[in-house]
Structures are given as structure tokens and as C-alpha cells.
Length: 166
Image (tube, rainbow, N blue to C red):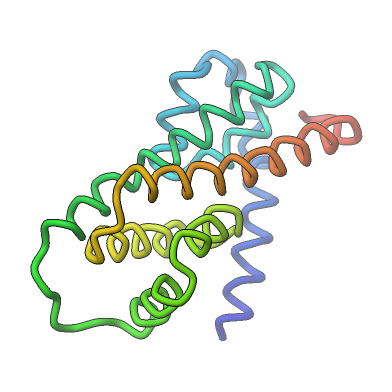
């Protein structure tokens, strides 16, 4: 069941820009601040195909990585200040064991891997709970997302040479 859901989600992610593009006349008018907000709320990869050929790709990479990393500050803080939680989901337990086993390199890998955003939010909560310093957590997450955003941006730049609607 999860495999079918994953396939449907990947197809939707690939088709949404094609369906939305005809309705977006001046999407590049959102500029860098709009792209930061989109990454903060987790929708940066949806708008990246429209902006990658119109704005500076290097700035898009930096803004995307920063916006998606700063999004986890609240989860880290809640984990740090929160009390012991009683009921854990299986996913929470898996992410927690991953963080315990790999630590900050695990956070780095989660930043690179195209995992759903809530997994990264859980990892931020767990890192805060286990008192991993914020600067270290932020640096590991930012570096991972920097690599991820670089790969996505280069992929969209390459695809834009062959797809007319970009």
C-alpha cells in the first residue's frame, strides 16, 4: 500500500508543474522572498521549476536550503523544552533510533534524502529533546539541504533545456 502511495505522490509531483504552468503568467514576480516563504512552508520544490531559468540558480540554492532549514527551528525548540512524551508512533521510534545511531551525520543524510518533511520535523524534535546543540543541528541540516537543493536545481536546469513549458 505504501509503495502505491509513493508512486502516486511521485507522479503528482511531476505532473503538478505541468498543470499549473498555463495558469501562472508572471510566476517569477514572487522573486527571492516568495521562494524563501515557499521553502519555509515546504513548497519550494513546486515553484523551483518556474524560477530556475528566470532567477540566479546559486541564490535559489542558498535561499532554498536556508528557508527549508529554518523551518525546523520551532520543532527543535519544542523538543528541547518539552517534557518526556508518552506515546510514540512507529515512525517516531524509527527516526529516534536512526538519530541515536548516526547522530548529526544522520541529520545531514536526512537533509539530502528526498524524505517527506514531517520526518525531518521529527528529527528536529528528537535532536532538541536529546539536547543536541542548535548550531550543530542547523549546520548539519543546512549542509544536507544545500546538497539536495543543488541537485534539484541542476536537474531542473537540465530539464528546462528539453521541456518547452519551462
